Image (tube, rainbow, N blue to C red; front, side, top):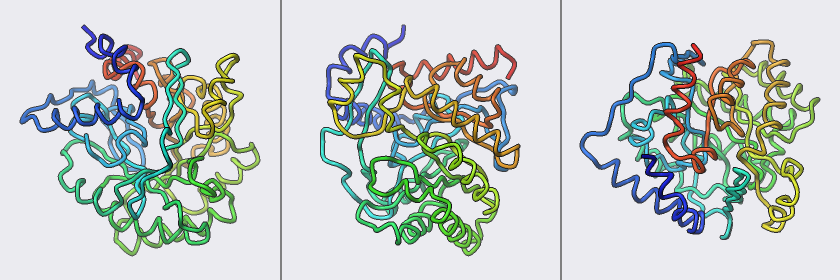
Length: 342
């Protein structure tokens, strides 16, 4: 029996952020169990990317476990990797509530959380007790009050604390919920940011640790091409595509009017799928294999993950679909991928 499916009607009666907090409270109780299941994966699912060996191409995208709170649970559920964060250098509460909205009829989530974060020092301390056998990435961002011109200082401050505790780092310059953050994707801003981060990586003797860049789905084709050239020239390890979208056009009427009535924020889930895939295909065409790419955005089934891998993505990440489908989704995707011979 799918316990989550049975409980979902009750869960979805709660305010989304209340439901999230309750789920994490319960998850922490589960993580305290002395013995959690050890996942087993067919060898056919193994993938190598960025110099790391992943037991499965399926991972948990950033945004759900911002503080690295439930890593033992994510491992037991069968994720091959987990990207924690976004983590900011200093604690911040994020945007005012309400800031999270579900639209189950469309498999859609709207959020304007605004990088609510305990801060890098707290998260780094928690990561020191991370479970073995799980690849963990750290997704980093800048604090809301930090001017764009000082963004590099924020990323470097968070990196110093988080990078030694994780397997790879992802720079989030694509959230729509921190004012001015997406401006860092412009080539003239991106080049010095990446250079500064790579210099710090060398300073800390972490040259072998992958450094990735997470991009928005709302960039023009010529901007995507320019970003690819900057990324390749910089020497970073890969890209993640995509973050949430500001494009309300991905939502069909009459739901679009209801979504717009909730106000600002990024959209994720099923309606993002086509747009995110289009962006990924453009990036992969521009990359010509020069850097690996992690697929994220709108993925919610074996077919979605398989399509992303067939397009050329090295790995895939889910988030919104997990909220609507529950933990059984992970096993279904793995079974489907194994059956297809991935």
